[in-house]
Structure formats: structure tokens, C-alpha cells
Amino acid sequence: MYIFDSITDITADYVQLDLYLLCLAGALACGFIAALGACVRSRPTKSFIVSLILLPMIVTTVIMMVNGSVGTGVAVMGAFSLIRFRSVPGKARDIVAIFLSMTAGLACASGFVAIALLFTLIVAGVLALLSLIPFGSEHSMDLHITVPEALRFAGAFDDLFKQYLTSCRLVRARTTNMGSLYKLQYRVRLKKAEQMQEFIDELRCRNGNLEISLCDLLDSQEEL
Image (cartoon, rainbow, N blue to C red):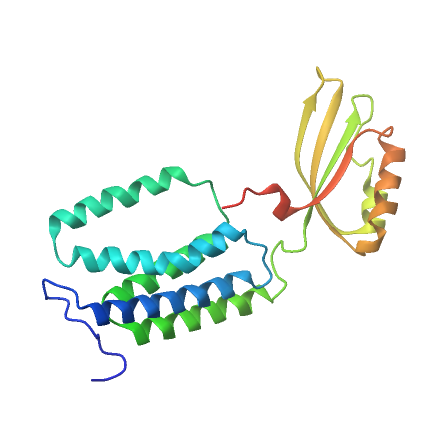
């Protein structure tokens, strides 16, 4: 038997205990690898990490129990479809990690433990490598400025943005407090992180000391 052959008989009507435990062990190892890859340059919650570790084992057991039964497969499909409506929107990286764990579980359920381990190692390694590359909006921040209606905000902060920021884009502008205030949201990148306080102090002098907030993009997203 080659290392990348299936170790189980998918046409059998029963599951051998030793092969089932071996598939579970491979699924658990894939789950740990996927969780480690998802942790690189990210701040996942503990529940998300635990889910990534246990998900391949759960998928492995479910698929091995189906074992060619159409009725059981339809029931499992209906049960898993309910999970879609019980989860909050997550980031694309989290969805990739979930599909990685599920694919590893499916491979282990079919008996291809070696392929599952190799696949998880490769994908987790690529995921970790891409996480180390600073591209996209990884270093961007959300800047929220409240200004009075008497202030013409178009161009009011351009000199400060040029002094403290490398890039700036107005994302949203809306009124509040019966139209007496404007709330502006910018997508910005600071030149130097240590100048954050000076930047906010300068903005306070322009907007009449109204509310200003500068937060990381990850803090404004819901956790999975």
C-alpha cells in the first residue's frame, strides 16, 4: 500500500475501530496545523481556534457514518445547512481556515490521512506566508471625526493629513444630532505610529474639540 492510498474500505457497511481512530488522529493533527496557520499575524478568538481543531474530527465522523447512505446524507446536509444561520459574518481569512479544516476532515474520512496531512501543511504554510506579506489594507486604520455643521469639512484637514498620513480616503459622511453635526469616516495610514497623539490633538483644534476616534480595522469587525 502506498502512503497516499486510502486506508479504509469506503464500500464496506461497517467501520473498523482501529482505522476510525487512525483517521481521527490524522484529522486532529490537521486541525492543529490549520489552527497554527490561522494564528500567524492574526488575533482569532479562543472559540475559533478550538473550532478549527475539532472541526476535522467532526467532519470525519459524520462522513464515515454516512458511508454511501442517501437518506443519511440528505439528513446531514439539512443539519449542516442550519449552521449557516447561526454564525455572524466573518473575515475571508476565517472562512478559508474553516474550509481548510472541513476539507482535511473529508480527506481523513475517506481514509487519505497522508494526503490530508500534506494538504493541510501546504495550505497552512501558504496562509502563514501570505500573512507575513504587508499588502492590502493590513496597516490601515479608521479615523472618525465629528465636526460642526458650520465647518466646511472638504479640505479642512488636508494639511494635517499631508503632514501625518501616507494615504487618506473619505469613506462616509453623515449627519447626526438633528443635522447640527457631521460624522466623517476616513480610511487612513499613519506615517509614524508614535505621532498618533499629536495628530489627534491637531484635529481637535480644527473640529472644535468634538469627538475623534482612531481605531484599527480589525476592531470594527465582528468576531467569528
